[in-house]
Structures are given as structure tokens and as C-alpha cells.
Length: 545
Image (cartoon, rainbow, N blue to C red):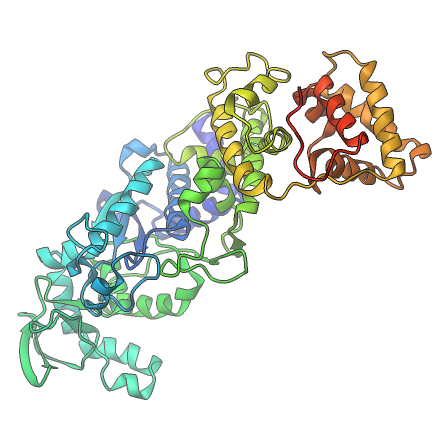
């Protein structure tokens, strides 16, 4: 594939990362002035622990970053783009999160900057430092190329001092944007600037009078008296929407996406950025993730599927694959979506080498592989689907071991060793964990109806006469023929397969039976049928042979 062919395909691709990246081409037809790298930003509020919603923003932004690099013919190592993961850790603590220890410690510091509150976990300099470290650890785990920047670092070092003076110079114009959006009561105390009280160290929500913009001096009422106070050097922070706009201008941010809940904030911040002499970044407004009950995920409540949970039961790549499609549509996050995400990722990944470039640029796996610098074709495939692994482990029972699973994989996979198939071995461990937590406790094999028992007996006879080296396709055809025989009374083939799943596997859904029989082994499958026909009690099956 030539670079020109790839660029041409990307310019015409309907894949959303390329659609977003083309906004930046329109913004800078001749590149960013002065040869500066195009700056992508993601934001993080460290009042709670990082969650999948935090991760998805970094992933999606990186996808757009890599798409932009394709459009301009750049490589990640060329330095023509940057990604800043920004932590708003000067924000005052509004409430105590539900999912942290030592809640009394945090309750005593309500209103204080997150970076100046003791760490309830007892490990870091502050609560914000702890949560920032958790964010970096996770992003590093996935190999993201990013620069971590903290609000407290820039405020305290004076890095934002010139920007703060600019806000004071344009104080009245900013108030003109914000006041019409507020309730009358809120207008009385609203200020773009939030001083940090020299008496209590709280971030104050008070009316402010600008005394000297160039010196950064303001006047406000602080616990019983009016004081003149310099807001530079970490002695104040800005109100959220103003802070966001100031950051865009001060850092030169060109692209930032955000959730639907911040739509109005984005509008106001864009107006303020213009007042400050800058320009609102390009970006995408994405839908929020929902929990299993269809409710918004909150990092303070901890009601979403955690990063750790996903990675216990599913692969790293499957998480990215689930996040990739349709960012403007809401997605529910629960463990039930993991198996299909794993299998769909590998299905798309396997297609890449045989696809023309026009199809590759629309393949989610192609985009995900490029997140960490992947450039070429990839012929990797998974010899056994995750769903089939789960069915196998389900039949083996809650006490199944990795060694047992690999012994059965030898029926189906050439050179069936963990070293030869590391991706599959990783999924074996995850399948065992998923089975133990979610499948084994719910499996319940039912007794077959008379017509189903007759069909199972016929299947057993056919298997008895079938060679042990029969292919999965040959076994599948054998199963089909029994289900299509009107003698057994199945109105549709799916009724036959449903009966197989429920009586043999204890599940309402299942794999291609030919693949399962080839994996489990003909002899073991016959013993499983015998258990069922002999009236084995309801419940999880015993391990065969």
C-alpha cells in the first residue's frame, strides 16, 4: 500500500475518526502556523477514581489523532501532533465520593482544592495525586502516547499567570457571556475567578472586584472582612467554563471532544475563548455510557463496569473495540457485552490483510491497532472464538483448569500450546474467570422432551459412526441433517439448536455445534448425550471422561 493510496482512502472514508480529522485539515489547510504540532486534549476531573468513561475519551481522541496523522502523511514519531491529558485538580471538592475509604477525612476538606486534600488511601501527597497516578497507570498500561498536565502544576508554578491577567482584563465581557445563563440568585455571587481563601484554604464562590488586572489583584469578602488578594501563583482558580476556555487559549488546544452533558458548557466556553483572543477547538460531542440499568455512569457512585472488571473477563483490545463504534450513540456497559466484543474484534482483525485499503480504513480493528503506532498488515487470527471457549469451560464445570482446557483445545487447534497461541492462552484464563463468576452459577441443563431425546439418540448414533478426525464443518452438517428430518418434529432448525444448548450445555444460547463437538471431542460429546438421555439431574454437568 502506498502512502498516497492510504491518504486518498482516508480523505474519502466515512469512518468517524477520519471525519473528525478532516475538521482539523479544514482548520489548518497549510498546517498549524509556525510549524507547531496540532494539540489534542482530554480532560479528567480527579474527584473520583478513573473509569471506562475516562479511558474512552483518551482512546477516541487518540483515534482522531492517528487519523489526522494519516491525512497529513505523518508518522507518530514525527512529532506533528501532541496529546495532553489534563487533570483539573485545582477544583474544589464538592462532595465525598461513595467508593473511597476514610470518608471523614475528605468530608473535613469539602471545598478545598483536590490537590491540597490528604490522600484517603494514604499513599500519595494528596487525593488528586492519588487519582492522577491511577489515571497515568491505566493509560500507560495501554501504551498511550500522551503528556500528563495538571491544573495545580500550572496554577502553582505561575504557568497560567498571564492567562489569569487576561481574564481580569476581559472580566466584564466574560461576565456578559455568563450572567444571562444563570439564575438571579446565582448572579449575585458569580465570578469568573474563584479565590482560594488565605484563611481556610477553601475555593470560594464569592463576588469579586478587579482592582489591578496587571498585578492580578482582586477584592472580595472572605469570612467577615473584605480583602485584597493576588490570584496569581496558585492563589485562585477559574470558574469551570472560564477555566476551560482559558486552558484552550493558554495551551493552544486544537481538538477536544466531550460528553453530551457538557454541550452548553462548550458553547459558553467557546464564546469566552474568543473574548480571550483564541479559538474554540474542533471536537466531537459524544453520548455517555450507561450502566446495566440504563442509568448514567458516575465515577463518584462507582456504578459502572470498572476497568479492572472488563480486563478480568475480556481482552484489552475488546474494550477498545466496544468503545469504537458510533460515539454519538449511548452504550450500556455490563459484563454481558464482553464475550461478543472479544469475538467481534478478532473477526475484524482477521479480515485486515485481505481487505483493500478503502475497506481497511473503515475497519475498527485497523484503527485500534494504529493507536500505538501499528502501520502495516497483520495476519493474526484466533483459532477458537471466545464464545466457544466459554461453552467448553461451561461444560467442564466450575472446577475446570487451564490445563484441562488446553487438553481439549488439542482436538481443534494445531500445535495447541500456550506458547504457540499467547492470545488464546490469555483468553483461556479470562474464560475460566468469566465462567466461575457468571456462567457456572446459572447453568441448568433441562431434561429433553421426547422428540428431542429421539433426535439426541440419533445424533449419538451418527457420532458413533463418525471418524474422530471429522472436521467441524462435517460435524455441523451432520447436526443439520438431524434437525431437518421431519421425523423429529422441529418446526425450524433453531428449535433443534436451542434444544441442544439447553439440554447439553445448560444455556439458552450456544456455539456452532459442529465446532463445539470438534473441540470437546466426539467421545466426550457422546458421553454428554448419554448423561442427558439417562436422566442426569438438573444442574451443572460433570466433567466428561
